[in-house]
Amino acid sequence: MGHDPNRFLSSLATKLATRSRHVCFLLGAGVARACKLPDLKGLEAKVLDGLADEEREKAFPLIEAYGLENALTRLRAMSSLLNDGQLLDGLSKAEAEDLDKKICRQIVLGVDVAGAELLPVRRFAAWVKRAQYEAAVEVFTTNYDLLLETAFDTEAVLYFDGFSGVIRAPFRAELVDPDEVQAREEIPSFFTRLWKLHGSVNWAWDGNNVRRLGSAAAEHTDVAAVYPSQAKYDQSRRYPFVVLQDRFRRALNVPESVIIISGYAFGDQHLNEMIFDAASRRERSETIVFSYEPIVEEVAQRASVTPNLQVICSSEAIIGGVRMPWSQTEEECIYWGDNKLTIVDFAQLGAFLARVHAGSAPLDPGLKGLLTEQKVAADGRA
Image (tube, rainbow, N blue to C red; front, side, top):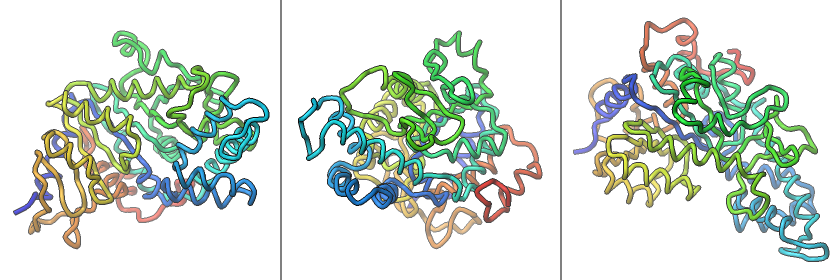
Protein backbone atom coordinates (compact mmCIF):
# COMPACT_ATOMS: atom_id res chain seq x y z
CA MET A 1 0.00 0.00 0.00
CA GLY A 2 1.11 3.52 -0.68
CA HIS A 3 0.16 6.86 -2.16
CA ASP A 4 -0.75 6.84 -5.85
CA PRO A 5 1.49 9.23 -7.88
CA ASN A 6 -1.02 9.65 -10.71
CA ARG A 7 -3.87 10.39 -8.33
CA PHE A 8 -1.80 13.03 -6.56
CA LEU A 9 -0.74 14.72 -9.82
CA SER A 10 -4.27 14.65 -11.20
CA SER A 11 -5.59 16.19 -7.99
CA LEU A 12 -2.96 18.94 -8.11
CA ALA A 13 -3.76 19.74 -11.74
CA THR A 14 -7.47 20.00 -10.88
CA LYS A 15 -6.81 22.39 -8.02
CA LEU A 16 -4.64 24.60 -10.20
CA ALA A 17 -7.29 24.68 -12.93
CA THR A 18 -9.86 26.30 -10.62
CA ARG A 19 -9.89 29.98 -11.58
CA SER A 20 -11.40 31.13 -8.28
CA ARG A 21 -8.42 29.83 -6.30
CA HIS A 22 -5.83 32.14 -4.81
CA VAL A 23 -2.48 30.59 -5.80
CA CYS A 24 0.79 31.32 -4.00
CA PHE A 25 4.30 29.98 -4.38
CA LEU A 26 7.20 30.03 -1.94
CA LEU A 27 10.43 29.29 -3.80
CA GLY A 28 13.77 28.71 -2.12
CA ALA A 29 17.36 27.78 -2.88
CA GLY A 30 16.33 24.58 -4.65
CA VAL A 31 15.17 26.75 -7.54
CA ALA A 32 18.65 28.24 -7.87
CA ARG A 33 20.16 24.76 -7.70
CA ALA A 34 17.84 23.57 -10.49
CA CYS A 35 19.18 26.46 -12.59
CA LYS A 36 22.83 25.56 -11.82
CA LEU A 37 23.35 28.37 -9.33
CA PRO A 38 24.58 27.57 -5.81
CA ASP A 39 22.22 26.83 -2.95
CA LEU A 40 22.89 28.50 0.40
CA LYS A 41 25.74 26.16 1.40
CA GLY A 42 27.30 26.50 -2.03
CA LEU A 43 26.93 30.27 -1.83
CA GLU A 44 28.69 30.34 1.52
CA ALA A 45 31.65 28.51 -0.04
CA LYS A 46 31.70 30.91 -3.01
CA VAL A 47 31.63 33.91 -0.70
CA LEU A 48 34.57 32.66 1.34
CA ASP A 49 36.56 31.76 -1.77
CA GLY A 50 36.05 35.26 -3.16
CA LEU A 51 37.31 37.09 -0.08
CA ALA A 52 40.91 38.13 0.44
CA ASP A 53 42.87 36.00 2.93
CA GLU A 54 42.55 38.46 5.81
CA GLU A 55 38.83 38.96 5.16
CA ARG A 56 38.29 35.19 4.92
CA GLU A 57 39.94 34.68 8.31
CA LYS A 58 37.44 37.10 9.86
CA ALA A 59 34.39 35.85 7.98
CA PHE A 60 34.90 32.09 8.26
CA PRO A 61 34.24 31.77 12.04
CA LEU A 62 31.04 33.83 11.71
CA ILE A 63 29.68 31.93 8.72
CA GLU A 64 30.71 28.59 10.22
CA ALA A 65 28.97 29.39 13.51
CA TYR A 66 25.87 31.24 12.34
CA GLY A 67 25.41 30.63 8.61
CA LEU A 68 25.58 33.30 5.93
CA GLU A 69 22.42 35.29 6.72
CA ASN A 70 22.84 35.26 10.49
CA ALA A 71 26.53 36.14 10.11
CA LEU A 72 25.49 39.28 8.24
CA THR A 73 22.85 39.98 10.85
CA ARG A 74 25.55 39.80 13.51
CA LEU A 75 27.89 42.06 11.57
CA ARG A 76 25.17 44.67 11.15
CA ALA A 77 24.29 44.51 14.83
CA MET A 78 27.96 44.95 15.69
CA SER A 79 28.36 47.96 13.41
CA SER A 80 25.30 49.52 15.03
CA LEU A 81 26.18 48.82 18.66
CA LEU A 82 29.96 49.13 18.84
CA ASN A 83 31.64 52.41 19.68
CA ASP A 84 35.04 53.49 18.40
CA GLY A 85 37.77 51.47 20.08
CA GLN A 86 35.49 48.57 21.03
CA LEU A 87 35.89 45.07 19.61
CA LEU A 88 33.54 42.09 19.29
CA ASP A 89 34.53 38.79 17.68
CA GLY A 90 37.87 40.50 17.04
CA LEU A 91 36.23 43.15 14.88
CA SER A 92 35.86 46.90 15.30
CA LYS A 93 32.84 48.86 14.15
CA ALA A 94 34.56 49.88 10.91
CA GLU A 95 35.82 46.36 10.23
CA ALA A 96 32.34 44.90 10.73
CA GLU A 97 30.87 47.41 8.29
CA ASP A 98 33.58 46.72 5.72
CA LEU A 99 33.27 42.93 6.02
CA ASP A 100 29.48 43.18 5.62
CA LYS A 101 29.94 45.04 2.33
CA LYS A 102 32.63 42.64 1.09
CA ILE A 103 30.42 39.62 1.81
CA CYS A 104 27.43 41.20 0.08
CA ARG A 105 29.60 41.92 -2.94
CA GLN A 106 30.58 38.25 -3.13
CA ILE A 107 26.90 37.27 -2.86
CA VAL A 108 26.16 39.44 -5.93
CA LEU A 109 28.95 37.72 -7.86
CA GLY A 110 28.05 34.26 -6.58
CA VAL A 111 24.47 34.31 -7.87
CA ASP A 112 25.16 36.01 -11.21
CA VAL A 113 22.63 34.61 -13.69
CA ALA A 114 25.03 34.97 -16.64
CA GLY A 115 26.00 31.31 -16.39
CA ALA A 116 22.65 29.96 -15.19
CA GLU A 117 20.43 27.39 -16.90
CA LEU A 118 17.19 29.32 -17.36
CA LEU A 119 14.94 26.57 -18.68
CA PRO A 120 13.34 25.64 -15.30
CA VAL A 121 12.38 29.23 -14.47
CA ARG A 122 11.31 29.97 -18.04
CA ARG A 123 8.89 27.06 -17.87
CA PHE A 124 7.56 28.39 -14.60
CA ALA A 125 7.24 31.86 -16.14
CA ALA A 126 5.35 30.37 -19.10
CA TRP A 127 2.79 28.95 -16.68
CA VAL A 128 2.53 32.25 -14.80
CA LYS A 129 1.98 34.15 -18.04
CA ARG A 130 -0.93 31.90 -19.07
CA ALA A 131 -2.54 31.51 -15.65
CA GLN A 132 -6.01 33.05 -15.61
CA TYR A 133 -7.05 33.41 -12.00
CA GLU A 134 -9.48 35.90 -10.54
CA ALA A 135 -6.86 36.89 -7.96
CA ALA A 136 -3.23 37.65 -8.73
CA VAL A 137 -0.71 34.81 -8.56
CA GLU A 138 1.74 35.61 -5.77
CA VAL A 139 5.32 34.35 -5.95
CA PHE A 140 7.39 34.68 -2.78
CA THR A 141 11.08 33.79 -2.76
CA THR A 142 13.89 33.77 -0.24
CA ASN A 143 16.50 33.87 -3.03
CA TYR A 144 18.62 36.94 -3.80
CA ASP A 145 19.31 36.13 -7.46
CA LEU A 146 17.58 37.54 -10.54
CA LEU A 147 16.46 34.22 -12.03
CA LEU A 148 12.75 34.91 -11.75
CA GLU A 149 13.03 38.48 -13.03
CA THR A 150 15.10 37.28 -16.00
CA ALA A 151 12.62 34.52 -16.82
CA PHE A 152 9.62 36.83 -16.41
CA ASP A 153 11.19 39.38 -18.74
CA THR A 154 12.13 36.70 -21.28
CA GLU A 155 8.57 35.33 -21.32
CA ALA A 156 6.96 38.80 -21.22
CA VAL A 157 5.22 38.22 -17.88
CA LEU A 158 3.53 41.28 -16.39
CA TYR A 159 4.54 41.53 -12.74
CA PHE A 160 4.84 43.92 -9.81
CA ASP A 161 7.58 43.54 -7.18
CA GLY A 162 6.82 46.34 -4.74
CA PHE A 163 8.92 48.98 -6.51
CA SER A 164 7.85 51.64 -8.98
CA GLY A 165 10.35 52.74 -11.59
CA VAL A 166 13.28 51.40 -13.59
CA ILE A 167 16.71 52.87 -12.81
CA ARG A 168 16.48 53.54 -9.05
CA ALA A 169 12.92 52.51 -8.24
CA PRO A 170 11.67 53.35 -4.73
CA PHE A 171 9.82 50.80 -2.62
CA ARG A 172 6.07 51.50 -2.50
CA ALA A 173 4.74 49.99 0.70
CA GLU A 174 1.22 51.28 0.08
CA LEU A 175 1.05 49.21 -3.14
CA VAL A 176 2.42 46.04 -1.53
CA ASP A 177 -0.29 45.69 1.06
CA PRO A 178 -3.08 48.17 0.32
CA ASP A 179 -6.65 47.76 1.45
CA GLU A 180 -8.93 45.64 -0.73
CA VAL A 181 -10.51 48.58 -2.58
CA GLN A 182 -7.14 50.12 -3.45
CA ALA A 183 -5.82 46.76 -4.66
CA ARG A 184 -8.62 46.42 -7.19
CA GLU A 185 -8.23 50.01 -8.37
CA GLU A 186 -4.44 50.29 -8.63
CA ILE A 187 -2.78 46.96 -9.50
CA PRO A 188 -4.71 44.66 -11.87
CA SER A 189 -4.96 41.00 -10.94
CA PHE A 190 -3.30 39.91 -14.19
CA PHE A 191 -0.06 41.41 -12.86
CA THR A 192 1.75 38.61 -11.04
CA ARG A 193 3.17 39.65 -7.66
CA LEU A 194 6.84 38.86 -7.06
CA TRP A 195 7.91 39.30 -3.46
CA LYS A 196 11.57 38.84 -2.46
CA LEU A 197 11.40 38.15 1.25
CA HIS A 198 15.14 38.22 1.94
CA GLY A 199 16.09 41.00 -0.43
CA SER A 200 17.81 40.96 -3.81
CA VAL A 201 21.15 41.61 -5.45
CA ASN A 202 19.58 44.55 -7.29
CA TRP A 203 18.36 46.26 -4.13
CA ALA A 204 20.47 49.05 -2.68
CA TRP A 205 20.31 51.30 0.35
CA ASP A 206 19.77 54.95 -0.57
CA GLY A 207 20.16 56.85 2.64
CA ASN A 208 17.42 55.37 4.81
CA ASN A 209 15.44 53.79 1.97
CA VAL A 210 15.73 50.76 -0.30
CA ARG A 211 15.66 51.14 -4.08
CA ARG A 212 15.53 48.51 -6.79
CA LEU A 213 18.23 49.08 -9.41
CA GLY A 214 17.94 48.29 -13.10
CA SER A 215 20.53 45.51 -12.73
CA ALA A 216 22.59 43.75 -10.07
CA ALA A 217 24.29 46.22 -7.73
CA ALA A 218 27.72 47.38 -8.85
CA GLU A 219 30.82 47.24 -6.69
CA HIS A 220 30.89 49.72 -3.79
CA THR A 221 27.08 49.94 -3.81
CA ASP A 222 25.45 49.47 -0.40
CA VAL A 223 23.66 46.23 -1.29
CA ALA A 224 20.42 45.33 0.49
CA ALA A 225 20.78 41.66 -0.43
CA VAL A 226 20.03 39.93 2.84
CA TYR A 227 17.18 40.16 5.29
CA PRO A 228 18.53 41.49 8.62
CA SER A 229 16.41 39.12 10.70
CA GLN A 230 17.31 40.15 14.24
CA ALA A 231 19.43 43.25 13.70
CA LYS A 232 18.82 46.03 16.22
CA TYR A 233 19.27 49.05 14.03
CA ASP A 234 17.44 51.79 12.15
CA GLN A 235 13.92 50.52 11.52
CA SER A 236 13.59 52.60 8.36
CA ARG A 237 16.25 50.39 6.75
CA ARG A 238 14.24 47.30 7.60
CA TYR A 239 10.77 48.35 6.56
CA PRO A 240 10.62 46.66 3.11
CA PHE A 241 11.35 43.31 4.75
CA VAL A 242 8.75 43.87 7.44
CA VAL A 243 6.12 44.87 4.87
CA LEU A 244 6.89 41.86 2.67
CA GLN A 245 6.72 39.43 5.58
CA ASP A 246 3.35 40.88 6.51
CA ARG A 247 2.25 40.43 2.91
CA PHE A 248 3.31 36.77 3.11
CA ARG A 249 1.26 36.29 6.27
CA ARG A 250 -1.80 37.88 4.69
CA ALA A 251 -1.45 35.86 1.48
CA LEU A 252 -1.29 32.59 3.39
CA ASN A 253 -4.50 33.46 5.19
CA VAL A 254 -6.61 34.18 2.11
CA PRO A 255 -9.42 31.57 2.26
CA GLU A 256 -9.24 28.61 -0.13
CA SER A 257 -5.69 29.26 -1.24
CA VAL A 258 -3.33 26.79 -2.88
CA ILE A 259 0.19 27.34 -1.55
CA ILE A 260 2.98 25.50 -3.34
CA ILE A 261 6.40 25.41 -1.69
CA SER A 262 9.42 24.26 -3.69
CA GLY A 263 13.13 24.35 -3.00
CA TYR A 264 12.65 25.77 0.48
CA ALA A 265 14.45 23.95 3.31
CA PHE A 266 12.45 25.51 6.18
CA GLY A 267 15.49 27.34 7.48
CA ASP A 268 13.66 30.58 8.34
CA GLN A 269 11.71 30.05 11.54
CA HIS A 270 9.68 33.25 11.07
CA LEU A 271 8.35 32.02 7.73
CA ASN A 272 7.87 28.50 9.08
CA GLU A 273 5.56 29.65 11.84
CA MET A 274 3.48 31.67 9.37
CA ILE A 275 3.14 28.61 7.11
CA PHE A 276 2.18 26.23 9.91
CA ASP A 277 -0.18 28.72 11.54
CA ALA A 278 -2.02 29.44 8.29
CA ALA A 279 -2.30 25.73 7.46
CA SER A 280 -3.89 24.99 10.82
CA ARG A 281 -6.25 28.00 10.72
CA ARG A 282 -7.36 27.80 7.08
CA GLU A 283 -8.66 24.27 6.77
CA ARG A 284 -10.07 24.84 3.27
CA SER A 285 -6.72 26.05 1.94
CA GLU A 286 -4.04 23.57 0.93
CA THR A 287 -0.30 23.81 1.35
CA ILE A 288 1.81 21.46 -0.75
CA VAL A 289 5.51 21.16 0.04
CA PHE A 290 7.82 19.65 -2.59
CA SER A 291 10.90 18.42 -0.75
CA TYR A 292 13.93 17.48 -2.84
CA GLU A 293 15.77 16.37 0.30
CA PRO A 294 14.40 13.96 2.94
CA ILE A 295 11.42 15.42 4.77
CA VAL A 296 12.37 17.80 7.58
CA GLU A 297 11.24 16.30 10.88
CA GLU A 298 9.45 19.42 12.11
CA VAL A 299 7.51 19.59 8.84
CA ALA A 300 6.64 15.89 9.10
CA GLN A 301 5.30 16.36 12.62
CA ARG A 302 3.15 19.33 11.57
CA ALA A 303 1.84 17.53 8.47
CA SER A 304 0.88 14.48 10.50
CA VAL A 305 -1.66 16.55 12.46
CA THR A 306 -2.60 19.04 9.71
CA PRO A 307 -4.40 17.19 6.89
CA ASN A 308 -4.31 20.16 4.50
CA LEU A 309 -0.50 20.34 4.74
CA GLN A 310 0.93 17.85 2.24
CA VAL A 311 4.63 17.01 2.00
CA ILE A 312 5.85 15.42 -1.20
CA CYS A 313 9.23 13.69 -1.38
CA SER A 314 10.63 11.55 -4.20
CA SER A 315 10.19 8.28 -2.30
CA GLU A 316 7.33 9.04 0.10
CA ALA A 317 4.65 11.59 0.95
CA ILE A 318 2.50 12.81 3.80
CA ILE A 319 -1.00 13.30 2.41
CA GLY A 320 -4.05 13.75 4.61
CA GLY A 321 -1.83 13.25 7.65
CA VAL A 322 -0.76 9.78 6.45
CA ARG A 323 2.91 9.11 5.77
CA MET A 324 3.49 6.35 3.23
CA PRO A 325 5.83 5.55 0.35
CA TRP A 326 4.63 5.96 -3.20
CA SER A 327 3.02 2.89 -4.69
CA GLN A 328 4.36 1.43 -7.91
CA THR A 329 2.34 2.89 -10.76
CA GLU A 330 1.45 0.82 -13.80
CA GLU A 331 -0.07 3.76 -15.64
CA GLU A 332 2.17 5.98 -17.70
CA CYS A 333 3.52 8.93 -15.71
CA ILE A 334 6.26 11.15 -17.08
CA TYR A 335 7.09 12.34 -13.55
CA TRP A 336 7.77 8.82 -12.26
CA GLY A 337 11.05 6.99 -12.80
CA ASP A 338 13.23 4.53 -10.88
CA ASN A 339 10.42 4.22 -8.33
CA LYS A 340 10.68 7.92 -7.53
CA LEU A 341 8.50 10.97 -8.10
CA THR A 342 10.63 13.46 -10.04
CA ILE A 343 8.36 16.50 -9.66
CA VAL A 344 10.08 17.32 -6.35
CA ASP A 345 12.83 18.78 -8.54
CA PHE A 346 11.82 22.34 -9.44
CA ALA A 347 12.95 21.73 -13.02
CA GLN A 348 10.27 19.03 -13.32
CA LEU A 349 7.70 21.05 -11.37
CA GLY A 350 8.09 23.88 -13.87
CA ALA A 351 7.46 21.49 -16.73
CA PHE A 352 4.37 20.10 -14.98
CA LEU A 353 2.96 23.57 -14.43
CA ALA A 354 3.60 24.60 -18.02
CA ARG A 355 1.50 21.64 -19.15
CA VAL A 356 -1.47 22.26 -16.86
CA HIS A 357 -1.74 26.06 -16.68
CA ALA A 358 -5.15 27.38 -15.72
CA GLY A 359 -7.57 28.08 -18.55
CA SER A 360 -5.25 26.29 -20.97
CA ALA A 361 -5.83 26.34 -24.70
CA PRO A 362 -3.90 24.22 -27.23
CA LEU A 363 -0.22 24.79 -26.59
CA ASP A 364 1.28 27.65 -28.56
CA PRO A 365 4.59 27.09 -30.39
CA GLY A 366 6.58 29.00 -27.76
CA LEU A 367 5.32 26.84 -24.94
CA LYS A 368 5.81 23.66 -26.96
CA GLY A 369 9.39 24.71 -27.50
CA LEU A 370 10.00 25.17 -23.78
CA LEU A 371 8.56 21.75 -23.00
CA THR A 372 10.73 19.96 -25.55
CA GLU A 373 13.87 22.01 -25.04
CA GLN A 374 16.58 20.23 -23.06
CA LYS A 375 19.03 23.06 -22.56
CA VAL A 376 18.84 26.81 -22.78
CA ALA A 377 21.60 29.37 -22.78
CA ALA A 378 21.81 31.97 -20.03
CA ASP A 379 20.48 34.69 -22.31
CA GLY A 380 17.26 32.72 -22.90
CA ARG A 381 18.03 31.45 -26.43
CA ALA A 382 18.15 27.71 -27.21
